[in-house]
Image (cartoon, rainbow, N blue to C red; front, side, top):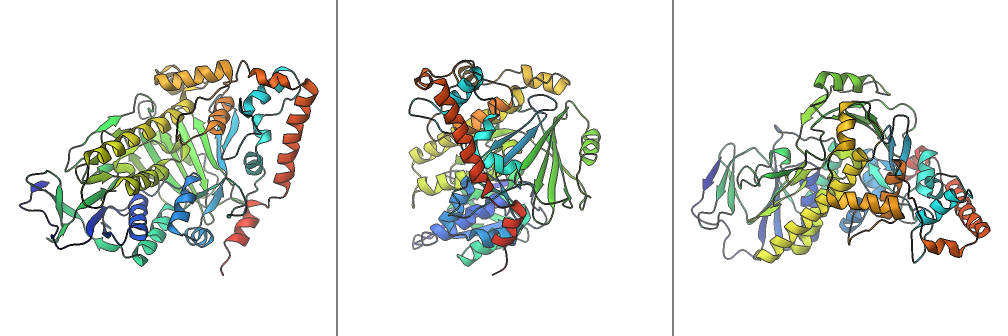
Length: 505
């Protein structure tokens, strides 16, 4: 319920802005931690969460930029990993995506070595076409081979590209304690009313169950799918992506570990969607993402339960969702972060990243005392571009398939895709080129690994490769492969490194 308030809450004598974060999941505590630590002298930060609402808590795989965010906040990585039972993640293994029986890894590493005119895939394609080398492109990537062999390392001195598998509930708790140490006030309560300023239409204050009123200057909506402020109070709707990303349902369950944790996420395609496996130190996260148009909830759950590796230790948790992006993530004095801003299914582990990215964008664009329209417009434009680029990368996995064994896969293979993605696929197929734009999240190596993994092989390579004779090309490719082999041989087994890195002081 939304009400008009009679006056703005901020005292003219106040030297600090009052920033209210609504929602205590991962995105909420990420926002609170960032503002509390980095801008605590300019803002009084409070976070409101309701124990009765709870957290979705299934976003348990991340991508490498989160490490930069942690460094910005001064978080001790080993301490964090120990507290939240995290493991290392070097990439994602995709099974049955390009075709039934296929398997490839999209890793966080770099493929081989390119030159000023072209990237490494051109040399690799030349080697294939000339019959000089027949190794998969992953043979030239250190992180990918390490993942396959169950090896991992980390820390600032390692030079490795990695992310984390983490327990979302423990991670939110870790960020909560961090935030409170940096002055963030924690408010327990359920919001019953949102009050808007009568002239500006901005959010003025929130009323909690029991009658307590919380006023603020800036409100960050981290209330999840309910989007309590940005949609509930300010009526900002989603731009749906369901045509491109047809899955709309998920069910999650936790299991006991079976053996040492793999240093990568597993994504296993089924006839109607895909299954994830995420290994942590103390358990594994599992789930099924599926399209309800092509399978019943019961059959999806049955398929998941029949494909668990360990004994279930929780009851299944099911939820429905709509993929899409909020038409505007910043409206008036309200900024949506996390699921409130939109949802792209977790295929490439981007949910936590998109929340983190929004927080960093806000830190850069948020002025202290007023909100120029240019700042708001820039934030919304950058958000739109980021969502669409990540969306296109996820669409690639579904569309670039040979599978026609079910209605679901026939739909994905034949659906209309965004023109920008269609152009990128065609350009890569014909020339081996990836035309990146500025500040894209997924870089050339990511696009190359997924395209080649799903049978899009370039037909031609850049003519500069011909500057090498065949013998020189063979030595170049073999030398890179042997270098990767030597690097991987130095890396410890994943479990052994966790035992050493995360041991108690």
